[in-house]
Image (cartoon, rainbow, N blue to C red; front, side):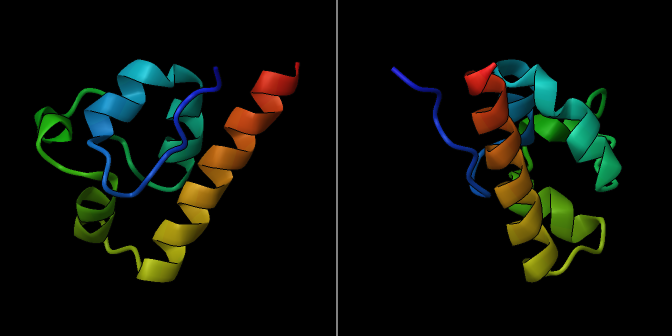
Length: 75
């Protein structure tokens, strides 16, 4: 069974805990939420918007996360 795809409605903490390989990618987009207490409350979308990201940026980040997960599954 494959891993669940990343969705912008997911809590940031859920992504970090279940997919730690995505942490560098998220940080590259400016989400330094690894140690942030708000990561348990904010979704990927809401946290990204708080950091000034556009809807297009968020969609690109979600796509990049899912592409990376797919690449990691192939290894």
